[in-house]
Image (cartoon, one colour):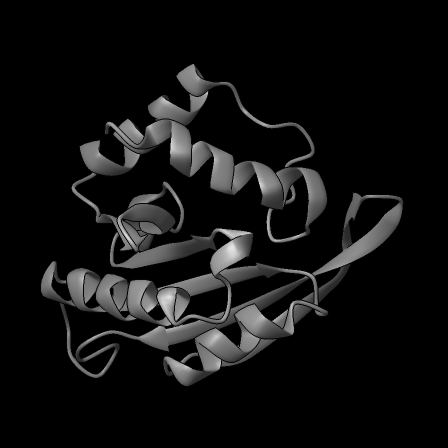
Amino acid sequence: MRDLAVRRDIYAYHVLHGNASFEEELPGMEEFQRRYESVRDHGLPYLVAELEGAVRGYAYAAPYHRRPAYRHAVENSVYVDQTAVGRGLGTALLDALIQACTKAGFRQMVAIIGETANKASIRLHECAGFHHVGTLRSVGFKHGQWLDTVLMKRALSEGDKTLP
């Protein structure tokens, strides 16, 4: 947790300048810590990637939805420092997150990708075995433009082939 401020700084870039997050204002440290603790309280993985001795990315899984029928599905989030993009951190983080969620017994992983123009995130997920399941057109408005949400999904372990 000592690097929470660094992770928040990584997230800040995506909130303030990008469309990977549909938040428009950076959450305070207290809220950022509450979110971290919520992931951990659910027993879900929260991973950090270091490059050259510094934190340059993080990824976590969160419950897909709160209703009990969704208990076997998680949603992933992957954020990489803008100075470290293209160096394999996103791939390493997502692969490790998939492994951790599979080991924990989850059956489905969902990616909700901000904006159809986010080709890097879409490609990252495709390479990790996700497939496109839908696009919600113009559901967000940020930086003066309407934004889509791309929905992708992949099975974990046996997926829906067997009962949990």
